Image (cartoon, rainbow, N blue to C red):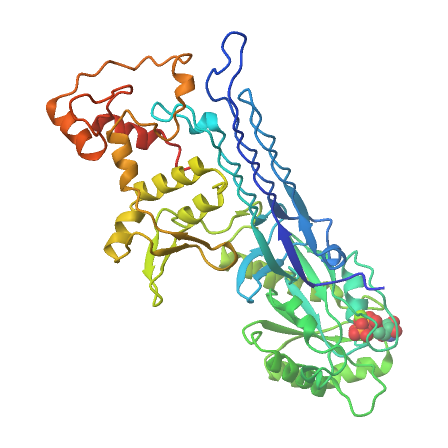
Amino acid sequence: MTTFVDRVTLYAAAGKGGDGCVSVKREKFKPLGGPDGGNGGRGGDVILIVDPNVTTLLDFHHSPHRKATSGHQGYGDRKDGHQGEDLILGVPNGTVIYDKDGEQIADLIGNGTTFVAAQGGFGGLGNLALSSSKRRAPGFALLGEPGEERTLILELKSVADIALVGFPSAGKSSLIAAVSAARPKIADYPFTTLVPNLGVVQAGETRFTVADVPGLIPGASQGKGLGLEFLRHVERCVALVHVLDCGTLETDRNPVADLEAIENELALYGGLEDRVRIVALNKIDLPDGKAMAEMVEQELRDKGYEVYSVSAASREGLQDLIYAMGRLVHKNRVEAGVPERTRIILRPVAVDDSGFTVRANADGSFTIRGKKVERWVRQTNFKNAEAIGYLADRLAQLGVEKELYKKGAVAGSEVRIGDGDTEVVFDWEPTIEAGAEQLAGHLHRRGEDSRLESTWNMPERVENVLTDDEIAKQWEYNVVDPHTPKLSAPIITDADTTEENQEDGDDK
Ligand SMILES: Nc1nc2c(ncn2[C@@H]2O[C@H](COP(=O)(O)OP(=O)(O)OP(=O)(O)O)[C@@H](O)[C@H]2O)c(=O)[nH]1
Ligand SMILES: [Mg+2]
């Protein structure tokens, strides 16, 4: 059974936000006491966190679909719904995250580093939060937003400072076992090691990790042996150690030819050219091995390599090799000057979501795009006329209507908001009449319920005396008989209107 998986697809689904609640307060002798519907709870996020106890992506391989819980809907009596629970998933150190098109979006290094894989939907506002001095009794609430759904590719690129590379049976696993507490499988047949092993090594002050990757053979780049797939685990290394088998009984092999063959495969894999190489001539405990090592040592030095003759079996020469590795790691750390990265929290890039675009399509329709605008659409309960009206007001306030006019839209034009699955299509009805409705204060305004008027406390209400101008204005829009305008509600002054804009809670 496989126990090591280093590439998986994760389908992360965050929780939906709870819907806002529409509710009216009821008390004895006061049956309609104003709106008191609470907000929906936020949906849970799907979060990935680097966990030192997790070493493979195996869990995701077994269950790739992960879902956080949804927020609860709001309740009456001013109670907000509960938030959904975040789903927190451990990943190994060095997990790289790609989107489904293969674009890298995060690289999780350091225990505790966190990545929000899918963000929970906002809860919808209840009618309490939507009420304002101008919209006293909203008969609607906003819907909770759907949670984000993302398909991500997780790939483990081990975080090791030094990688051991070499032919099968050269003694890589024996070496890592001799210098660290790692206990990989060791045997005298090729391809004993099928997955990378990591070991932690202490050389004086310097502590570093060494990776033992499965053996390479000529032709690995064409898929021979285990192929080059595991080389991704050496990509982060500072240095490569060539482990060369001086005791091989295969007559057509010798350490220098082996090194060239491996270098050839590394070159075909690419991207590792700048990594320092050092050479470990292994198995010098064998008489033939020692002779072979002595024979090729100088030749390799002449080629520019630092060379160490060692025996993983007898431990001869291992200290020098360990300190040589430690020096390289230390030098690199000093040069890079970066302390180990821990507890970084990566969130999806925050984009400025306030803007929108209006595009005139060839077929005479118009497409509106914009994060905020599309969110508003998702929050709208299209079964509720008041909620639709509220959306129209929000769009008008943002300037969407103006822009539609500019682009040549007329009443009845087809207007599309969003794209793909989430696209909503409207026949455009300019909300000019909504403005008229507000000017002519006596009409039933959106968000008002005349039944509430008598029972509800409205301190800022004053009896307005209309100027002739105002009467004329009303008349222009609505009033049949200009001499007896019905004035049951206050006239909205400019100051009032701006106040409404601010307290609408439109940014939620
Ligand atoms: N005599 C002697 N034998 C060794 C030494 N190092 C490794 N061996 C033997 O060589 C064989 C292969 O060792 P491994 O450590 O499994 O080799 P590997 O490079 O990890 O091989 P793969 O995992 O197949 O790529 C085993 O039988 C080891 O006991 C050494 O220093 N001296
Ligand atoms: Mg091995």
